[in-house]
Length: 230
Length: 353
Image 1 (cartoon, chains in turn brown, blue):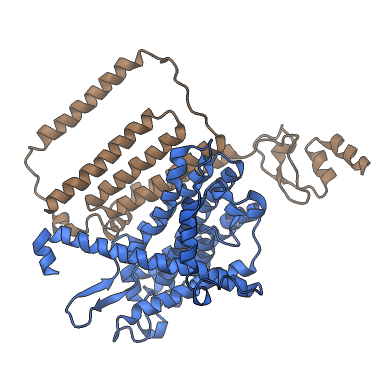
Image 2 (image 1 turned 90 degrees about the vertical axis):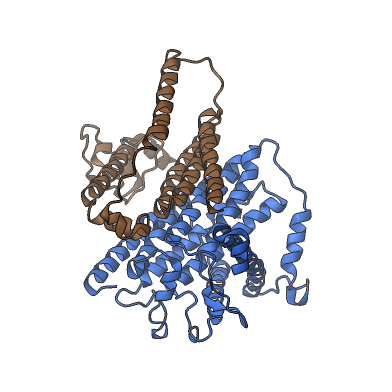
């Protein structure tokens, strides 16, 4: 009875995952692709649950479905990406390569299914034999991350931190454009924006009045004209 | 329950029982939500010096059902230029994501049905990662709002949807971080165990007072972020009617609008449940050990206090400006939540949990 239920749940989730994955590639509308990708992630989270790994399942949803895909959907909505029109294929020579890669992939899957399955099962390691029910649980994962796998964990953190700093430095505004508003009194400008010669110099430059700020950014003429009108 | 085990096997029997539990929990929560809406309208009425709806039934008791009938019989209008599939999907996502977390909240301790030997805890399912599950489903709830705003093909809806997604992503971080302090103290993510640990000592074991690291800062950050997460006053920018008509649900009518409306109140309810569970001892209270059924009364009483706080805030506070909202979330709440996390971890390291 329980085996029967497990099979039903597995095939439901697997069908959802594969169907959504095909939809990701097949859809012309980028937002539909994004929604399908969320479906894939949720189906995978369900699979992890059936494999007694609730922590991985929850993290899968929080990180992928909840954070990364929200960002993707956000960008698609913000840029209002239009539906892609059907065009004749470019890079036609890639088609046989794709077919070949797909064939290799299927062969690998078949190999695992038919040969590895028949291999004799290795005796369970003593660590797993102590308490097999706690393997996928939060406490055991936490203990593993902070003892045995501390170094990889820290290196991953540093990698993510580097990506964060990189994004910040890329997103930093390089120069003030004519239409930008400068707030007097706030140290919003850097030496680099005031004088293009001082590339990379992020020392803040303070402006106390609107006229001063305008002069700093080279918008002095327009500011004085406006002042005369008042 | 033996006859059920014999009939369909243990796994299916557990599944059937949980299905019943889920339905009972949903019906209870939706009834309370219906009366929260009524309470909000009446209390707002009193705050503003008027009566509020009091015509249907004694003191307006049947107003929620009248509202529901009205929603059902209204005309469904789907905008011509909308993205139809996504437009219909969005309200379903919103209400599903709002209702799903309910199944892990402990409503009460183990109770025994009188005159029988049937004993069960008042929680649908105990789950090793219950807290993470709640946070995960909350983060999926963004899609309902964002997709509703996008698919309506209306600039006000789109602005509302964008604002809502930005706000939800920003405040989710401080919401999650504010709860980590409690997790450090209780060293589990299972909500039922977290509540069990808060018993005794006349309420001084509640996580908000608990030695060695009282989670007062954590609670304040949590409640601010929770209000922002549920898009309520003073953080209701996604539906600021003076700027955006009605925000992301401008183009929704009849029952589809009702689904968004219900989702908002169910969200309010679930974040209040989480606050009660994590900081105020859940169902713990005087006499629970002797009469376990009292637990559900304490739980609901604490919940009602939080719901009242929401309504009270709505009656008294003005709305934030959007840049203020973002600065507050990222530059104040998030650093303070991190500080609370570091403080709690340090104190627990030296004094033990």
